Length: 290
Ligand code: THG
Image (cartoon, rainbow, N blue to C red):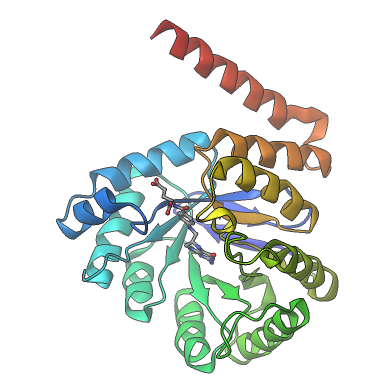
């Protein structure tokens, strides 16, 4: 199962047989007051610096979310996508629950983008699947529907099956779907981690599909989030997660991903692990001199 994304000149393949794909989460004003203010005022300089920093840290795809409270989301999305395209050359994940904002980003994006996202709700599927078809984009499919998130892996699997059927009706193949098992904080429900991990295992075993997740959600509201995010990432990779919307600038998360790839046989001779080690040593040395 290969999900292919592309920018003007770069192709990224998400597959169970390949290294984990990091989708950088940082271009998102949720929980970032300063960024939200800047976006509302037409200042996209932090979008540029966040794009550069995440790519340098190892992101293969960048998520772009323009959801500023009270803001003109389609207009902000357009400008943010343009800024990212002008800055870096890699596939984008266009992140919005608003179909107009999704289309604003898709219409000017040059490449095969990732639409983030549709749910299994009829209304969402009927709006988002035609966009995927029209723009040749891949889509993240959230495993929830009219009922909201259900704490039962079997229900999440059934929703995924239904999304596959509806996507086929619209001419969107299963390879162009990335399933999101729904990551919610264990700070609110101590079973949330277990349910999500079981959903990943079930989706992989029953459907063989590619997966992605908003992995940092798992620790909302708790202290020492990077440690939790890193531990969750390693467990999730072993449950079949092969891409995630996460923060590559967080060293604990990045090293957990590199270690996961090594342990899962996706890093021959430990090349990526050793390269990452050298990069960290170099950064340490540079910081000591400064
Ligand atoms: N699934 C899919 N898409 C998603 C999510 C998901 N997109 C949004 C979100 N969830 C994933 N992205 C983030 C981005 C940031 C954070 C968590 C998830 C985060 N931010 C810090 C905070 O809010 O405290 C702020 C960081 C900062 O201050 O710099 O935790 O589940 N398909």
